Amino acid sequence: MTEGSVEADLGGYLFKKRIAQTGGGKRGGYRTIVGYRKGKVGRVIFLYGLPKNGRSNITGKEHEALSTIADTFIAATDNDKQVADLVANGSVFELEYKRS
Image (cartoon, rainbow, N blue to C red):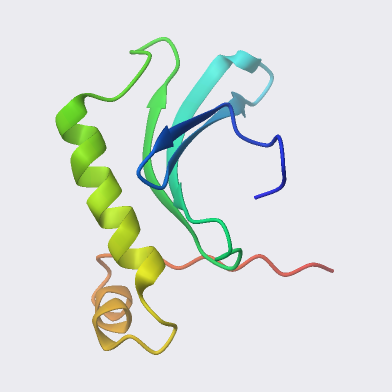
């Protein structure tokens, strides 16, 4: 993530990012929660998304669960069999950004 690209550092490797809705700007868009650890630039985990007009934040229990998930995935190595198995069985989807 680039400096200044998040709206809130929620702690526990969780960051809130607003995403604009097509034709609606950020105000009518979505809130997303991603997991990220500074120094692990190659791995950002999308964890949760909700419409901005729904609610403003996650609960304490949600924060705790999402933080645990983020920590586990961020700490995993690229050769981690458990992560590869989750991708293979469709529990987790991996997206790669390739610059043109």
